[in-house]
Picture 1 (cartoon, rainbow, N blue to C red):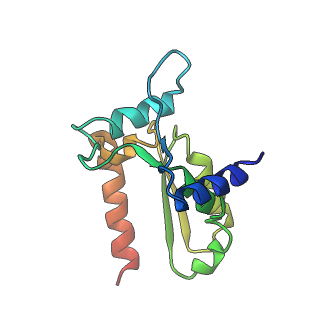
Picture 2 (picture 1 turned 90 degrees about the vertical axis):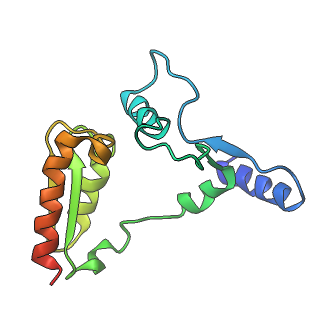
Length: 146
C-alpha cells in the first residue's frame, strides 16, 4: 500500500468523523542513532530559549503529507528571473543540496552564498553566523530593492 493510499484513507476517515492523525515533525527521543541534524532541529524547535513557540505542538497533520508530496518548488524557478535570487546556506547544512539544486536551475541574476562551518539551524539565531548573513542580506537588498 502506498503512502498516498494511506493518506487518502485517513482523509476519508477524518471526513467521516475519525480523529485527526498527527505525526511528530522531530524525533520523540534522542539516542546514539539520532542524526546530528535532527538533534540540531530539536535543540532549536523544542527549546523555549531559541525557537520553540508556546502555540506549537511539534506535530502536523498526517494528511498534509499529500500536498507536500505534490509540491515541486523548482519546477519553474527560472521564471523568477529577472528578479534576483539569493540562496544562503550553511556549509554543513543537511539541506545544502536543495539550495545547490535551486541555484543550478535558476536563471540570472542569482547568487549562492555559503556560510563556512554553519548548519541549517545555525543560520536561524546563532550570533557568529548572523554576523555573516545579515550584512550579506543588507548588501543584497540595497543592491536590488530600489
